[in-house]
Length: 108
Image 1 (tube, one colour):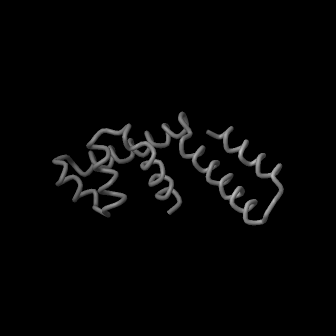
Image 2 (cartoon, rainbow, N blue to C red):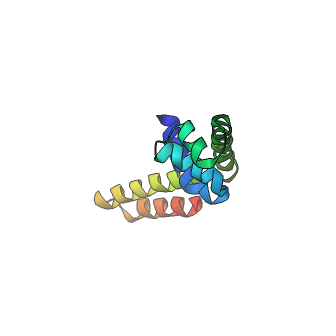
Image 3 (cartoon, rainbow, N blue to C red):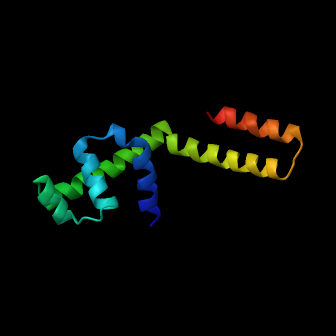
């Protein structure tokens, strides 16, 4: 489940860097719940070809994240925003809020 969630997030960030065929296979397999055989029929390739493309594409997504770190940066920004909202709700002093805003700037 954890890997599926990770691939889903990475796909959201990096799908524009994939070919149409790669996007279709990942979408069909992970989002449309199609089997390898169904995808093979739709793509006009073998089941093994779908499997290989799927695994290579998943690895590409992981490689993109390792290099670009867009998802990691997004998560860090979301964490800071949550702290900032909590600080505002708790009525923390302005210095603490400014510090969180600066942290957010540094993550951008």
